[in-house]
Amino acid sequence: MAKTKAEADLDQPDEQLDRAIEELRGVLHEEEQRPDAAFRAASSANSSVIMNIPVDVQIILGSTEMPVSDLMALQKGSTVALNRRIGEPVDVVVNGRKIARGEITVLESDPSRFGIRLTEIIAGTKGA
Image 1 (cartoon, rainbow, N blue to C red):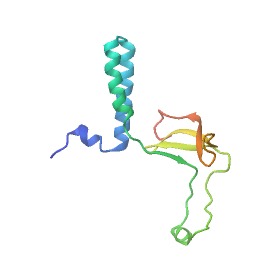
Image 2: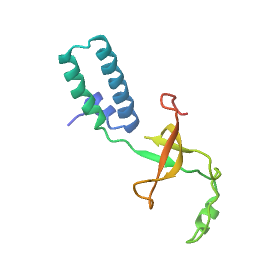
Image 3: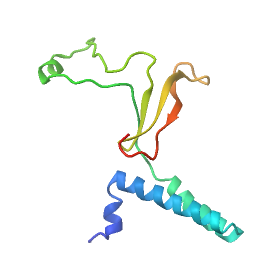
Image 4: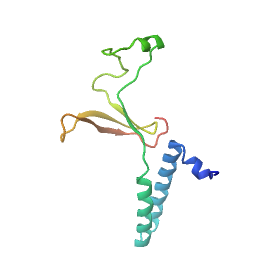
């Protein structure tokens, strides 16, 4: 069964995210123009569809480059130095696009886990 262009576009996560963001912007813009109750109900239904699109969120602590020989020599207990220092912000990446920076924090509700406190939002700049 052949796919339509729209279905093929949705196969690509970045294109799916871009399309969802643009659709959300359009819905919000239309809502500003027409604040009647019927329109708000319709835009709420559209927003719920967009808000349920799964995205891949990564927190990047740092990275490094190494020759394959060094990579192959890694074993349990090896240490890999990253390009960031303690206290520097980490990157928040959604579907391969950096959208924010933040600092690592311990969760108040569960001190055995950590999370990220956002300190800067970068969203909207492609490839930031």
